[in-house]
Image (cartoon, rainbow, N blue to C red; front, top):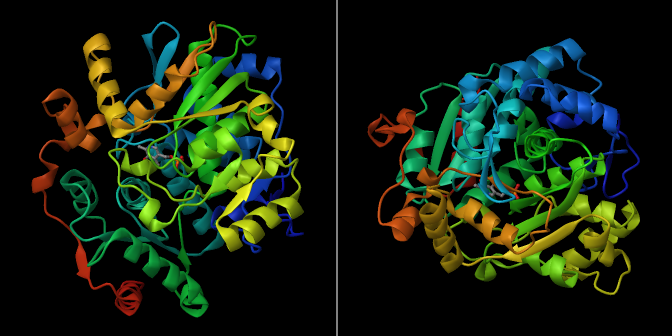
Length: 471
Ligand SMILES: *Cc1c(COP(=O)(O)O)cnc(C)c1O
């Protein structure tokens, strides 16, 4: 299997070459040259597999530069009951007739990003050891991504994490999750500024090519193909749990921000998994809902990006969206480039409403969408608690609301649960008047010793810190 860039760069790369990279050299995103097809006999065989084995089967269709025995061992080491809380890894439960919740957030940081990040940690460690290299991951977080990255990379040989976050602006629980890590390869940098300042610093450091090369700076952002690939697996696992045979179809409702999660669903569907619809659920930051309703993709400015009660979906542009648009355009890289580099770069928007391909977004690729507000989330959380004695978080509530707007009789609807309620306790208190239960391992984490360095909003201060901690 070779990988190409959505913007038409002539190089074709192998999996391990793109594993440690971000964007392709021409600014595009990597995609496999073709989607391997999974036939009925293969689905039948996969149906009975434990999660780690299923992960190995899916991954091995895309990864041919890691020996199968090693890849199988990496999957087995990643997807364990010990790390993900249950033997099923992503257990499915029926909420009401035909509507299911697939639990993706029982990993170490209680959000679905663990599903991919835990594998990435093991892949990085493996590949770096094989090359005899080291990597320093520099990131910016306002919550979920940073903690998922730190829990995935803690104690990993050859990897250090430098994670910037806006000082004092994460929830006490999120701060405690990250800052209580005592592993020497994990560095928390609290920047005296807001999240955008952290992101600007990361960009500035990464743009200093000499520094970047010297200190082997890398990232783990959501455009990483390996992360997306790891997420494809749970679409298969959800499908098998919701159906009794492979002639049935299901739909998925996916709380969406950067379009990584639902893009994995698109990949699963392209492989032949019988998915009827992919429901893209957004909050008030409705860039994606707008596109699927109108054909206009319009990136938002800072003033137009709302802080909501489902904050992990608060995006101004969807960084993985180009992958889907590339497929929508019939894999026409010149056209993708004209849209994402040309039109989007110049005017912050592009418009496919008059292009015949746009109708295919729903008809051919199964995409539909919905938008929720804070009031919707609170109402959905309250209703789900009252009628089903089930507590869901704000992001999952966005997914459930969207799911109900797109039910098809006879087609099971699987809502992806992307975080546990404890991570967003304030909204639970608002909806129900009490705090959510806390998993035993998180009781009292706010009072654990914290390991964090406060730094000014200054690129050189961050560079100095990195250079002093890289030996
Ligand atoms: C990251 C995240 C999302 C959005 O996922 P994308 O892959 O960016 O679309 C949704 N919910 C939670 C809880 C998240 O952490």
